[in-house]
Length: 81
Image (cartoon, rainbow, N blue to C red):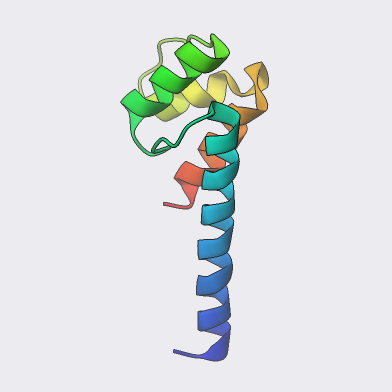
């Protein structure tokens, strides 16, 4: 692996880890931002956010992005895979 590839991988991991840490702080507990049920439960119980019905969970999140910054962070995390 080239130095650039290694640096990109380290940056990707640190970004994902940083987002996960921020999300856990917001939620007051650790949860998996990639698991729809976990995300839904945290949004409902911690932030009193009820997502609108959409064809996919990510579309529901995207339509509610303006409700709270945590939703944008969840979407960023999920896009990193």
